[in-house]
Length: 135
Length: 135
Length: 135
View (cartoon, each protein chain N blue to C red):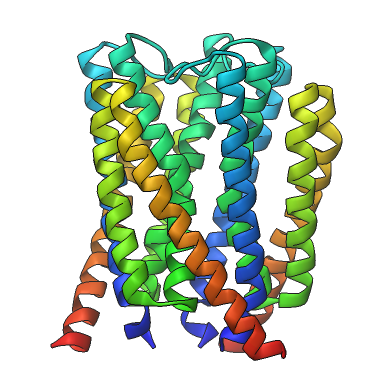
């Protein structure tokens, strides 16, 4: 049974590593711009890195839930491809946002689109399963 | 086996859509009150919408984890009912908070109570399973 | 099959209770230091409690995902031990941070190390499963 989810698990671990990477970038930005905890405001350069990580963290559970639902109820292979695209989009979003607020927009729209695809696939797969089970 | 969790999955997708809706509301509030990222402070009307979404996002993983634990270890049907009540409570919380800080309290207490029921059911189901397995 | 995950489920419920405890501590701190929502800034004593809870909330899904991946793909027993250590570290982190920014560092490094162990075990278990499945 684990073979039906092992690739979803692998993408999730990649996502965990990406989140850890973003967290480290915030620690470096705190040192570079001398913004000690618990402060979360400072120069715009720091605030952009801080908000980029906060935004990625906020959407990470949503991504993982939709990845697994799409992978289990629709198709592991398609969910994995979407998952990798999403993580790539978030990587570009983080570095785009760190450079300028404008720079976050392209990758943000890209990863939002991939996120919607995952939710749609999950919804489709769950609907089909419910029809099979209850009708 | 999927029929034992398909309704939990459906409630989770509903929750994902609700989170997406809250996120869109923040984007509209940013435009309406001219608060550009990375700023998170501004007029009280904006800050209430921002905090309402932040609070819902923060508790969303806690909700999903307890929904699935209660549904798998106790009862899918009861967990689904609690899940739908929780999402309804969060919808009223978001719009109550957007109108006034006072307006968030009723729905907040309601969804907190439903959240506690889900955690209690999860704890009860897990305890019973542990007794069966280890005693 | 549930016996292979019931202890992971129990640790997750403990984690949910710990998150609820942190959330209550923020409510008490809001009353004590008269910081009404939606404000998130105030005296340093309040901001430390607020940020301690925000940080624990942010990493809670990451913890739960890695706990379950390590428990399912590597070893439930070892994941459970790491999970309990992590929750204990977060408890000490929260109270250390509430007292002083310096007081958060020891428990933070401790729980970060345990978090890395969980991610490493998950990665190892998933890699072994992928080798078995695909080679």
